[in-house]
Length: 335
Ligand code: NAD
Image (cartoon, rainbow, N blue to C red):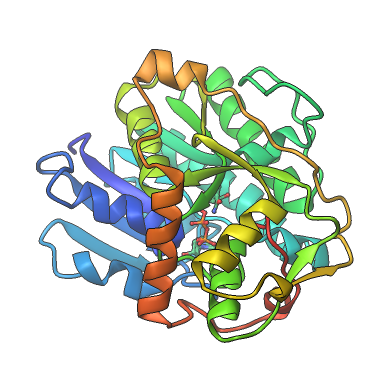
């Protein structure tokens, strides 16, 4: 077994697929073998993996991270695991949290159990800044208290704690990333940026939760993937790393930028009732990733956002859009 034999769970999703495309791309580690395990829920889309489908070092398995036998078989032949698979949409977790507990908590434990059984060399757990909850002032280091508000964030915080427990109790090499709001091409249209752009381009109004003054940190997909890969290759076992971008914006500011980029009228933003438990402000301190790993966000926000809008304009195809209960109730700032 080689240590550069990586099992990527959730690799047909927005961030996981870009991670896989990057690993197998020209700048990826030479010789790395990548296996994706993905259930292909409404959020998964094999089209995102089309660029690597015929790559000789790529394999895809459709399956569920809670399927212990399947996970055991796959983990047994891989030295490292990068764990993206999750239910990821906050609104859906508010409507119904069961799938979030099942996939995000039980699924993570299932993969951890297999990693322990087979003595996996590394387990990178992809988490989120939402676990810290709303931050009135200042910013959260990795030692800040976890105060998740939504069932989604609570399920991610639970999985972080289980992964860290596995390190402390059994010595598994676990590394956790906590990334901020990620934007870029090929995101499911239930999420804020693609939802806004696709609606505006179709000439429809976009819904903005409450007063729109909720603040989020925006991280380009390239930078999120760069941060995860730095944690995998240079991070320390048992450590958590915040990964953020250089731009903080209120949802209203973001909506106005997207209206302008789509060439729409300012009146196309429609305020709707706020989401229950909506966090006012996320803010992470990324000093640790910068100083220990040499991480810095490279993508300039206005250019990254313009390119992202251009991508949706050109593709005009709602990626992975098979609808569902959460798809209708979205405002800016959602993941
Ligand atoms: P996504 O919803 O686009 O992709 C999730 C993928 O997981 C999909 O391909 C889906 O089919 C798969 N999946 C879901 N349940 C599964 C199961 N039971 N078994 C196997 N596969 C399953 O999510 P994303 O935005 O790419 O996020 C990936 C990870 O990054 C998640 O863990 C999320 O919490 C985290 N994250 C996301 C953001 C963001 O802004 N999108 C920010 C920080 C952290």
